[in-house]
Image (cartoon, rainbow, N blue to C red):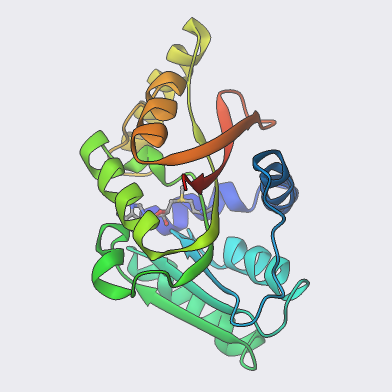
Length: 222
Ligand SMILES: C[S@@+](CC[C@H](N)C(=O)[O-])C[C@H]1O[C@@H](n2cnc3c(N)ncnc32)[C@H](O)[C@@H]1O
């Protein structure tokens, strides 16, 4: 079984939908702690889902955005052929009247594909664990470049900060290799915080119901 189908088994777990949609809402709420009031209704509001996984996440994301702005421009990207095909099919079937672009591409090619200051909101979930540290630094530099000056980023990812977390990391790396057939990378909470700060972001973090999986809301430092 390939990555797409294996990951779908996770997205079909009964709590997955609830986790993702409440995570979006929490991320947006977290921005208030950074002094940011997210305005989905500003003219030309444009957002990027950076690594989608498949049609279930895409649907939750699209519903979250159109509940706030039916005219929002949405861009959904992923490296996986099947991930992108499943989302294109969903958009064709259910969201034809909306401004949604679905594109197969590497997140590390964002700066080649989008102009500077394109996005108001960049969202991703469980993507960082697939990037090593130089790749993560490159992604953050590119996100910062394509983010509008008052734009914001929300994400959740594994960020361990205890011996228990280190154990979870060991299991995760095994699971990613054996069951998702990809290579994962461990980033501790301390390392992620340092990398985000060095990349020029202010941020707040919080827990999620998944052990060692932390939520982050980020904005570029002035
Ligand atoms: C764990 S899934 C998470 C997906 C989604 N955010 C969710 O919550 O369901 C990670 C996704 O990131 C994609 N991905 C991993 N590395 C990528 C890269 N360098 N560029 C684009 N997509 C990538 C994978 O193909 C996969 O679909």
